[in-house]
Length: 165
Image 1: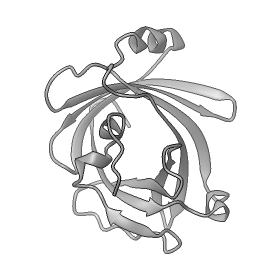
Image 2 (image 1 turned 90 degrees about the vertical axis):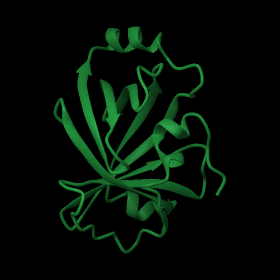
Image 3 (image 1 turned 90 degrees about the horizontal axis):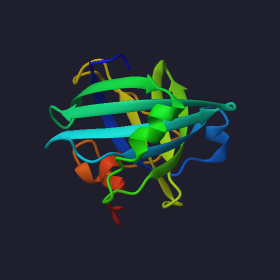
């Protein structure tokens, strides 16, 4: 994501995928902390992403345009800046830990997030170039429901409350 691009994505609640499927994907460990809300409709977070022994730190500000589209400003930051920003952590949100698997299916990149608080399900998302772009879902993924329009399944909301359904 470049600085100041629109993020357009669809999200799906899925049955936790089989290990065989994940062996075809690239994985990373993500620690994501939300910062105190700067304004209504805006979220701010810092993220530590570990893969292959390398850590990358990012600072992201997202402004909601609609359920599918957000203006996203994301910048890579130093470990020191990450630790400084953590002091502004939102006390009402937990830090999210997740294992992310990036799966290529027919030229589409799906990101599957496995969270420690769910044993039987996960979230899968795909970024789109525009809101009308068709999506061909991998047949080996069991879709429980699309949650693009359900704010309870955004990472920011999951940091506050985990849906039971």
